[in-house]
Length: 143
Image (tube, rainbow, N blue to C red):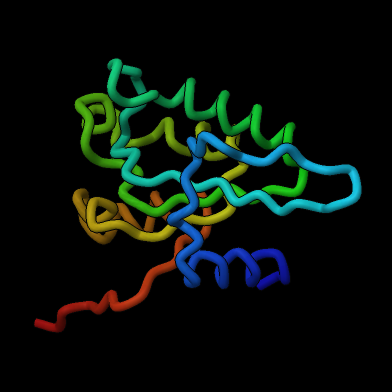
């Protein structure tokens, strides 16, 4: 695992996921200080379409890209619950999320409880192929 991935893992495990993506008062970067911005989102639940309450994938991607331009030294992480929840995600099995992750340059995601909605094989064979995932306290039940 590269140094950048180890650093991202440490940040995730150190509760960096509480830093909101939509913060109102983000400081403007100074030319004399290097700022590492950590952008986080969670509970996306496959909500690709905007419905007035949730921003949808297009808006989330655009906002993240805008902030990454403003803060060139940045990391994007997810707190989990990425795939399941919306009607669209159910009919696509969350397939468009790979393209969304790539557009946002998501480095890593925690595994939320909804990552198991379509079974462990889906999580292992599909979801974790998009980006690295981290988790704690997940065990396989022996029968």
